[in-house]
Each structure stands twice: as structure tokens, then as C-alpha cells.
Length: 163
Image 1 (tube, helix red, strand yellow):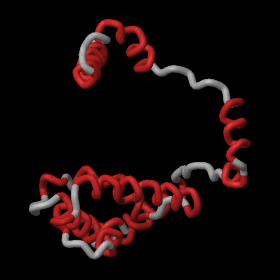
Image 2 (cartoon, one colour):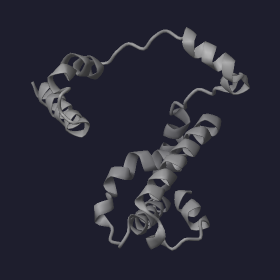
Image 3 (tube, one colour):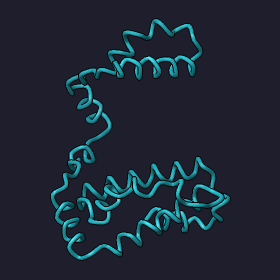
């Protein structure tokens, strides 16, 4: 689906920038999430979730990310088509049991003011361990430049996690 979308842009693969690929990937994720809400996950979607790590981008050659992405997608599609019937049945069963995100029809029919009011009335989110860690340690790095500050906080978080 994603590659078909890229092909419909009628651009040569080497003209597509990394930013465009990232934007298209985010668009694809949004569309897939909407599809999952409406129809649930497909057996092919379940296969992609389970097998994606067996097809790393580094295994595919190509001048651009888009070219490697295309080769990877073709290889994954070929692997899916080559599955035995029994394994396909297992994937269908797993896809049928998979949880899908809840539909949000009520939000769609609300006005902007109603959504804002609903958001204001939601209970506050409980801070995560990471949020609490950042709050506690931010004073230690606040004099660093922003990018170095975030990098240092990430290093401190990783070190804290190892302990």
C-alpha cells in the first residue's frame, strides 16, 4: 500500500527526499490506524508485525532509502505469498483476535469547543518514571545548550536504567 502511494506520486525514487519518505510513512501509519479501527488488522498486517525484524533495511541494496524500501516490501510480500495454508490460517485467527483501537465517533461529531471542554475534564495523566526522572534531574543540565541537554539527560536515563 505504501509503495503504491509512492508510485502514484509519479516521481523517480532518487528525487524523493528522506523528509518526504518520513512524511509518507507517518501518513501511512495514520491511514493504517484508521483502517485498523474500522476493519481490524488483516492477516497480512499481522504477518508484517511479526516478521518485520527478519527483513532489516541493511539487507537490501539500493542508492536511496526508497529503493531499499521497495525491495524490502517485495521480499516481504513474496514471503507472505509463500506461506503454507496452515500458517495462513493461524495468521487469520491471530488477526481476528487482535485488539483494535476503539472507534471515536463521538469525537468526530463534537464541535471544537466541546472537544476542548472534554479534554479539560479528563483526569490528568499519571507521570511516568521517565517524566519524574527528567523533572528531578533537569536542574543538573539546564545550563547546557538544548541539544546537549537532551543528550545528557538521555545518557543519565540510560545509566539509571542499568542500575
